[in-house]
Amino acid sequence: MAELPIAQADICIFQGATFSQTLFYENGTPSVPVNLTGYSAKMQIRSKPESKAVILELSTSNGRITLGTSGDYSTGAINLFISATDTGNLSICDKAVYDLELTVGSVVTRILQGNVIISPQVTR
Image (cartoon, rainbow, N blue to C red):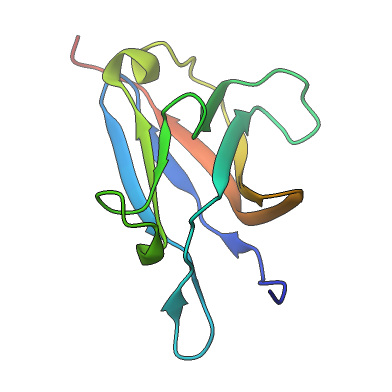
Protein backbone atom coordinates (compact mmCIF):
# COMPACT_ATOMS: atom_id res chain seq x y z
CA MET A 1 0.00 0.00 0.00
CA ALA A 2 1.27 3.50 -0.83
CA GLU A 3 2.18 5.74 2.08
CA LEU A 4 -0.67 8.10 2.91
CA PRO A 5 -0.15 11.60 4.31
CA ILE A 6 -0.63 11.94 8.06
CA ALA A 7 -3.87 13.77 8.80
CA GLN A 8 -3.84 16.58 11.38
CA ALA A 9 -6.85 17.06 13.66
CA ASP A 10 -7.20 18.53 17.13
CA ILE A 11 -9.58 16.82 19.53
CA CYS A 12 -11.44 18.16 22.55
CA ILE A 13 -12.18 15.89 25.49
CA PHE A 14 -14.77 17.13 27.98
CA GLN A 15 -13.66 16.19 31.49
CA GLY A 16 -16.31 14.03 33.20
CA ALA A 17 -18.23 13.27 29.97
CA THR A 18 -18.16 10.19 27.77
CA PHE A 19 -15.94 10.66 24.71
CA SER A 20 -17.02 8.71 21.64
CA GLN A 21 -15.89 9.45 18.11
CA THR A 22 -15.81 7.44 14.90
CA LEU A 23 -13.22 8.12 12.22
CA PHE A 24 -13.13 6.61 8.75
CA TYR A 25 -9.80 5.59 7.22
CA GLU A 26 -9.93 5.95 3.43
CA ASN A 27 -7.49 5.85 0.52
CA GLY A 28 -7.49 6.68 -3.18
CA THR A 29 -9.34 8.99 -5.55
CA PRO A 30 -12.24 8.72 -5.18
CA SER A 31 -11.85 7.79 -1.51
CA VAL A 32 -12.45 4.13 -0.71
CA PRO A 33 -12.58 2.74 2.86
CA VAL A 34 -9.50 0.77 3.92
CA ASN A 35 -10.41 -2.77 4.99
CA LEU A 36 -9.09 -3.05 8.56
CA THR A 37 -9.24 -6.85 8.81
CA GLY A 38 -6.18 -8.02 10.77
CA TYR A 39 -5.29 -4.53 12.01
CA SER A 40 -4.79 -3.29 15.56
CA ALA A 41 -4.79 0.34 16.65
CA LYS A 42 -3.19 2.42 19.39
CA MET A 43 -3.48 6.07 20.36
CA GLN A 44 -1.51 7.74 23.15
CA ILE A 45 -2.03 11.15 24.72
CA ARG A 46 1.06 12.81 26.23
CA SER A 47 1.80 16.32 27.51
CA LYS A 48 4.38 16.70 24.71
CA PRO A 49 5.78 14.30 22.10
CA GLU A 50 9.01 13.62 24.00
CA SER A 51 7.29 13.03 27.36
CA LYS A 52 7.80 9.55 28.82
CA ALA A 53 4.52 9.72 30.76
CA VAL A 54 1.37 8.61 28.95
CA ILE A 55 -1.69 10.57 30.09
CA LEU A 56 -4.11 8.09 28.51
CA GLU A 57 -3.86 5.20 26.05
CA LEU A 58 -6.60 3.99 23.76
CA SER A 59 -6.04 0.71 21.94
CA THR A 60 -7.75 -2.30 20.47
CA SER A 61 -6.06 -4.25 23.30
CA ASN A 62 -7.68 -2.23 26.10
CA GLY A 63 -11.07 -1.87 24.37
CA ARG A 64 -10.97 1.90 24.00
CA ILE A 65 -10.62 1.45 20.22
CA THR A 66 -12.74 -0.85 18.09
CA LEU A 67 -12.38 -1.31 14.36
CA GLY A 68 -15.15 -1.69 11.82
CA THR A 69 -18.90 -1.30 12.01
CA SER A 70 -20.83 -4.15 13.66
CA GLY A 71 -17.96 -6.52 12.91
CA ASP A 72 -17.59 -5.35 9.29
CA TYR A 73 -13.94 -4.28 8.97
CA SER A 74 -14.35 -3.18 5.33
CA THR A 75 -15.97 0.13 6.38
CA GLY A 76 -12.65 1.61 7.53
CA ALA A 77 -14.31 2.71 10.78
CA ILE A 78 -12.10 3.45 13.79
CA ASN A 79 -14.19 3.93 16.94
CA LEU A 80 -12.62 5.79 19.87
CA PHE A 81 -14.17 5.54 23.35
CA ILE A 82 -13.25 6.98 26.75
CA SER A 83 -15.64 6.49 29.68
CA ALA A 84 -16.93 9.44 31.71
CA THR A 85 -15.01 8.05 34.70
CA ASP A 86 -11.75 8.05 32.74
CA THR A 87 -12.25 11.57 31.35
CA GLY A 88 -13.15 12.72 34.88
CA ASN A 89 -9.76 11.49 36.07
CA LEU A 90 -7.87 13.52 33.46
CA SER A 91 -5.83 16.42 34.80
CA ILE A 92 -6.28 19.76 33.15
CA CYS A 93 -3.13 20.72 31.27
CA ASP A 94 -2.36 23.65 29.02
CA LYS A 95 -1.77 21.45 26.02
CA ALA A 96 -1.40 17.78 25.17
CA VAL A 97 -0.68 15.89 21.97
CA TYR A 98 -1.68 12.54 20.49
CA ASP A 99 -1.16 10.31 17.53
CA LEU A 100 -3.06 7.30 16.23
CA GLU A 101 -1.26 4.32 14.73
CA LEU A 102 -2.55 1.28 12.87
CA THR A 103 -0.57 -1.97 12.83
CA VAL A 104 -0.94 -4.90 10.47
CA GLY A 105 1.70 -7.62 10.74
CA SER A 106 4.98 -5.80 11.41
CA VAL A 107 3.94 -2.60 9.60
CA VAL A 108 3.04 0.39 11.80
CA THR A 109 1.45 3.43 10.14
CA ARG A 110 0.69 6.72 11.86
CA ILE A 111 -2.56 7.99 10.31
CA LEU A 112 -3.59 10.87 12.55
CA GLN A 113 -2.01 13.34 14.97
CA GLY A 114 -2.76 16.62 16.66
CA ASN A 115 -3.36 18.55 19.85
CA VAL A 116 -5.67 17.52 22.67
CA ILE A 117 -7.73 20.08 24.54
CA ILE A 118 -9.17 18.93 27.86
CA SER A 119 -12.16 21.08 28.72
CA PRO A 120 -12.62 21.31 32.52
CA GLN A 121 -15.77 19.95 34.10
CA VAL A 122 -17.93 22.47 35.96
CA THR A 123 -21.04 20.41 36.83
CA ARG A 124 -20.20 17.65 39.32
